[in-house]
Image 1 (cartoon, rainbow, N blue to C red):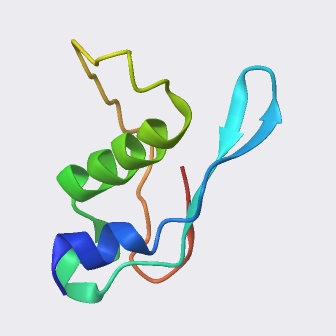
Image 2 (cartoon, rainbow, N blue to C red; image 1 turned 120 degrees about the vertical axis):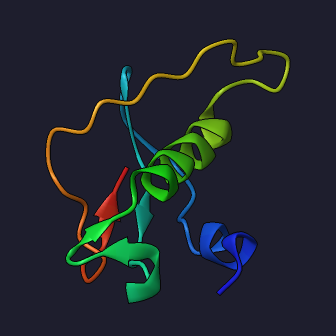
Amino acid sequence: MHIDQLLALTSEASEQSAILWQSTHPGLPSNWGQGRTAFGGITAGLIYHALNQVVDNDRSIRAYHVNFIGPVSVYKPALV
């Protein structure tokens, strides 16, 4: 599966509150992971893709830092 196809599966972000947005992904193919955990790069990419849906187009990202506190399963839907 190509990354563009993978990103296209991400749902549109929905506003949960003034500071919380939610976007989901139905899960990743097993070849995008290492054991039960998704690779960090694809996880960060999914988060970035979801952020692009809610940030105004006239703003640009100058820095992007991601800290992982737990595994993202390749077999379950991901909440980003």
